Amino acid sequence: MSDALRAGVTGTDGGAGVLLLDSLQRRMHALFSLYYDAVATMDLDQVNHFEREGVLPIAFSLFHIVNMIDASFLLMTGTPPIWDAEWEAKVHPAIADHGKHRTVEEMVHQRIGDYEQFQAYMRQVFDRVEAWLADLDPEELTRLVIPRPFPEQIASTYSARVAGPDGITLLDATECWIYQHGLRHMGEIELARGLVGLGGMTS
Image 1 (cartoon, rainbow, N blue to C red):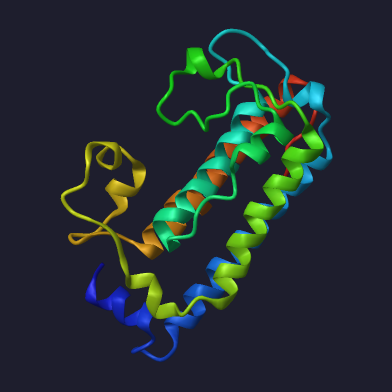
Image 2 (cartoon, rainbow, N blue to C red):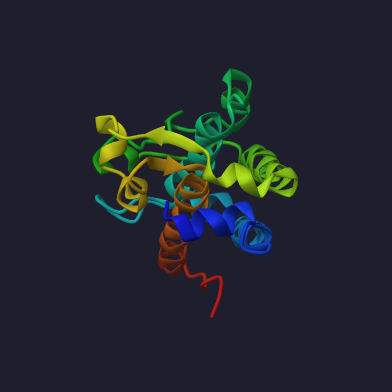
């Protein structure tokens, strides 16, 4: 992280850290609202629709992003994931795995079993992120989450490209693992919605 950005985050330049955190809070709330709107305007058949080989169903994008945010929270805050055997039994996904390290050929078979329970799980994950951001000290954003050199699993990620000379900070992780990752998969969902006769989420 540059000295100028570090000064902004910690507030030594007159409160820029507060503005940055406020922006994160508002953008995260907006992102999550898109997901709430998306699931409210799709039924389970549309979510589980299989278009053709090589095209991931909406079920993959939905389960993947929520489960990845849940798992990432452990690295970011030390808080264990919400997902456990009890949630797996409730949601009953065809593949109880976010699929980050699996192939497209495997994950085209992802399906969500209980849509209502999935939405309950999603809300718990999103609510926890928003509550955490609401109480976060802006100075925490400069905390190093993963120092260099990165392990192989991290080195190939987008966050590794974003990282500064010291490594991935909490700000990098929040932006890359939750916000930007969430937007990426919302784009997939918007495209896939067109395949089942639905419109996009924003103009």
